Image (tube, rainbow, N blue to C red; front, side, top):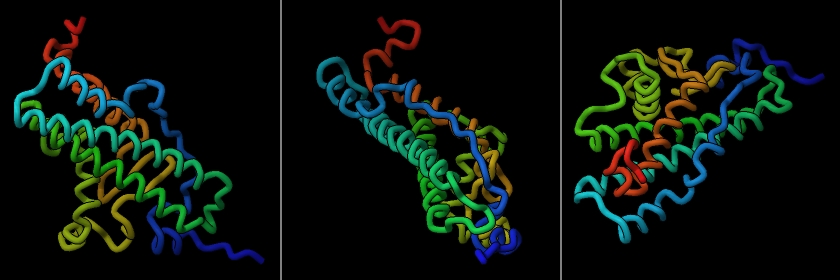
Amino acid sequence: MPVQWKAELLNQLIAPGISAFTAAEIPELTEQFPQVEYWLVNHFLNRVLRGSFKEGLHQAVLGYLRRAQQAYRAYHDARQLTYEYLNGNDPSKPRIGSYYNVLSAWETYALQVSMALDLYRWINGGQGAFVKNDGSKEQRLYTMANQVKHTSSCIDSGQCSIKDTVPLWLSNDGLHSFGISVSYEEAFAVLRDIAQLADQLQDPLTFARGPDNQN
């Protein structure tokens, strides 16, 4: 007779809520940004042939483009791995290795987003996409990435309870960490905003002209 694990045991020893993780609706972004794989090449060619950013800004913009591209890839990798995990999965005996691979992909996405947001703040003259503890989707995702990076500090401070086996886990509604959550739709929206700016930054000349005067 196949083993059927108790939900409490799975949630305690693998990840919170894994026994109830049965479905997800994760938007796809691939159709909206056809240049994403060429951002860095386009940026190089545009700098050579059309215009450039001043020193300092150039480094930040190049870093932002790299982080935006990696966040884009990580999101869609995480999306695919999530669906592969859920396809045919029995939540009473979950595929543990596959589940942790899914979490790693989402962690990579959150970390790349957090670095892109740091660079955006620098590019934007110190004004970021959020202010501290404003509750926005950007702030919650940024905090989630910090908790992934600094799990030991979260344990020491008591943010991480004995039930919080991992610093990032999934539910049918979205991503969760210690005391915060980000829906799949919100994770999609953050990536979309990051990609929109990357599309502009790949060409210094059109970026300098602004969105209302790019012809």
